[in-house]
Length: 112
Length: 112
DNA sequence: TCTATTGCTACATTTAATGTAGCAATACGC
DNA sequence: GCGTATTGCTACATTAAATGTAGCAATAGA
Image 1 (spheres, rainbow over the protein chains, first blue to last red):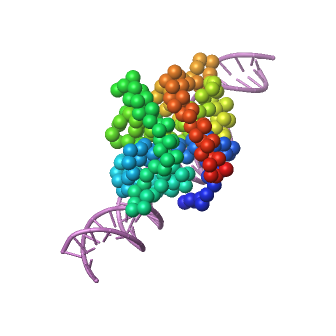
Image 2: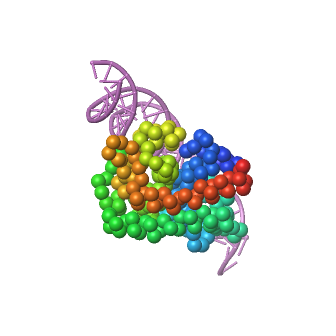
Image 3: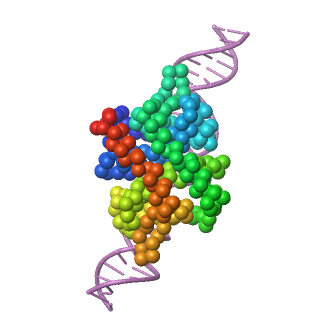
C-alpha cells in the first residue's frame, strides 16, 4: 500500500504533469477524501468516530485517506488521539463550505 | 454500469442518509469528476478533447462520469457535439476556482 | 465514396475499495 | 497487579471500479 514518505509530487494518478491543482484534484477525488474533510470541519474526531460518521466505511481506505491527507498537511493526529484539521486543512475545508447551500438547492431543484 | 434514469437519490454509495451534501460529495469524490468540471471551466470540449485534457483517462470511466454529471444537471451535450457546463455546473465550478490559488500555495509551502 | 470526426460501448486486465477480523499500545476502574 | 475498553492501525479474502485497447454506428466534408 505504497505510503510515500514525502514530497508533493508523489503518486499523482490523475496527472502526469504534476501541476499543483491536478495533484490536489486527484487527492480530493479519491474516495472519502472530501467526506473526511467535511466530517472534521467542526471538531476533531477519533478514527473510530470518523468511521461511524462516514457510514462505516472500511477502515482500510479510511486509514489510507487519513495518511494521505495527513501527509498533505491537511490534518493531524493530536496527542491523546483524534484527528483534526490543521490550519491549512481548515482553510481548504472552508472552500467547500459553500457546497452545503449549493447541494440543498441542487437537490430541491429537481430530484427532491 | 447502472445508469439511472432520474432522481437525485440514486446510487449514493457514500451516504445512506441521502443528505444533499453527501450525495454531492459522493458524486464529486468519484474519479475524474472534479477534473472534468475543472477542464470544462473555460470552454466546452468534445469527448475526445476532454479525454486528452484528462491525461488520456480511459473512455469507460470518462463516459460514466459524463453521464452522471449530465444527469446531475452540471453539464450538457450541446447540439453539434461537445460537452459544456450548464449554468448550474458553472456555478458549482466557480466554487472550486479558489482551489487553484490554494493548490499553488500548498505545493510551494513544502513539496516544492 | 472515402476519410475523418463525433459520442459511445465491449471486454479482458489491473487496481482500488469493502467487510470482517484482529493486533499492539494506552488508559480505565478495581 | 488484573480485566476491560479504548485508541490507531493492519491482514486478507471478496467484490467493485478503473484502465487500456479495440472498435462500432452516426454524422459531416471532400
